[in-house]
Length: 225
Image 1 (cartoon, helix red, strand yellow):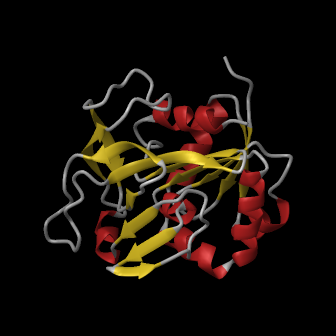
Image 2 (tube, helix red, strand yellow; image 1 turned 120 degrees about the horizontal axis):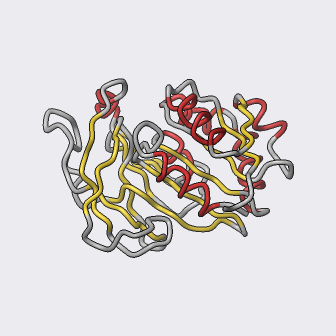
């Protein structure tokens, strides 16, 4: 088995924070929870991976705390891993399309990815559903899965991704509630992976921490320095 990692876990206020902490600690990793200010002042060489969970607040924190963004970029560029889930995956993207408005370059820019997100989709926050996703390419992060395979995953209002340069190993295979804006997400990206500097980055619209701990641990293993 791989050696344990020291993980900085951003406390975004999401219920997923506790679940992620429990899974990672249970797998033998050392977890240090941090608020946004602590990330800015303390994230560094003593950590292997930063996990940035969901919450809308976590998205806006990137815009409101430019110093935190610089610290995260420096950390990943130097070889740290980044795992962003739901809101944390939006945070790691480059561009944001929010309620149909294109906001270029407002996120961390860890991957060359455009994240689309509608405020309407927050109807799923606290009302998580299981959606079908489809494997789009063979990738070591999705061990044992082949293109075309169907994967069930937890969805709680996260983004869809588009990129012409980064790997998108998993796509939405089902639309959102048709009463919501921008609900036609089938075929759009649900998972983006790549590198920033010498660090590795996972952006996941899927929440693995509630019912798919193996997927969360696979994310972590893939970004390990």
